[in-house]
Length: 561
Image 1 (cartoon, rainbow, N blue to C red):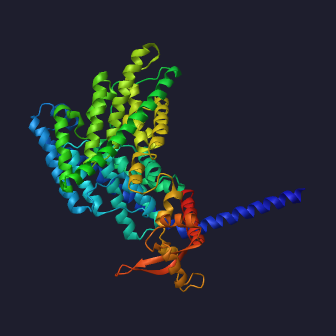
Image 2: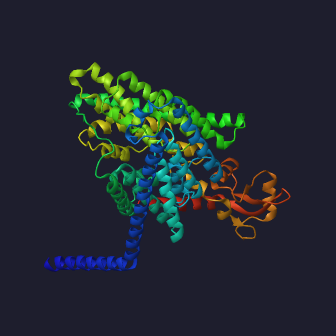
Image 3: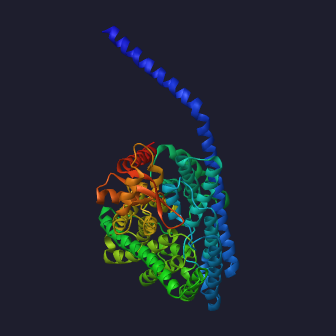
């Protein structure tokens, strides 16, 4: 018996020593490169943090100059006393400048934002467009400084992607490393923009990378902290919204009201998203019908915004003053509802007119107004079992933003960090969960993924849907002359039946042929100058499935590493 125990202990000791030796070898072989990667992540975090800080201060400085005020935090109140001609013309001039920038430096006149960063992470090895990204950054700066009704997170997220893309290209990063660096840059940019380190890291994982792999967590946290430090060096350790009248939940009997608020906010977020998409489609249709130059489209939207701002100056810019008024209950019911409707229209006009900016800050404002209106009704109907109506504004702010972003975890945390009030988490989580559950079933998961779906990029359904679009027939085919491939004569027989596919086509386009025609292979062709097509190989069904399986396996390995 004693000998048996000794043998077991000896075996366990040998296994432990072997494991330690393996760990030591791994550390010697891979440790320095990992440490180097963390330093790169830190450097990217610092760069993205300074970029976000510069963007914010640039907006403040340019806005102060354009509207001739030093009190940017109360711009809406100040704008009420400005000459109406000034309020009208500023967005028009801003729109003209934006239109020229986008016309000269983008191929489609479209502002790049968070959706493009998500696409870059999923299908482009963590890279985004550089020239168009810088142009979009400048266009958004002009938009937000001259009356555009959007937010600043979209431009800084994409510009963070430009920074990480530059680094990835310089170090020849592979797909996994490129995506990790992209996540680091995004986390730092969001953290520096909102002084929210926890939410910044989770936003990068939940929204951009769309997984929570352990290998990505440490560098993203390092970059997120770096971005927050940059923010706090300038603004100090203060929250974006300082609540003078924090809410308190009146026992659990009030929770059903927050369930209903969540559903209402889900519908409001749906209305906001649909309004933006409708404005985008309507703007494109009108532009085509009137043969309007694409550089003039933002100016037309600027004219509409200016006209709206004459009567409702609260739509100008990010809208923090109105958001704070909603969170402190400084609005009556009808005003809160009216402001929410007008702000929704203003956001749709700005984004439909391709003026630039993000959708997160507007969703915070609309959510706070929605929550306040709901809270005024709820507390008025049941005053004996209700807390303060400002608590509903707080929960509504998170619920609408979470549904728009499709990010309940990071949005819940970012709302907490924006306000510094962690005591009413139950109300916020209940509302956020209901709004996200409802809205995600009425759109393609989120505003960003629906944007991509409208462009034909199918990311909402997961890797199983979009990986086929990343694989080209020419890279998977068996060349003609390969003993395992068909002959040229057999290929031309199939071509005469209309069964062929270009070498540049994706497997997503090829797979329906196999399902519909029940064929084992499909000729792959290249076009000639005379308009004919020449077969160069054959795409076999089994090869396409193998390539798809390998891509799925690699994606799963990255997400679970």
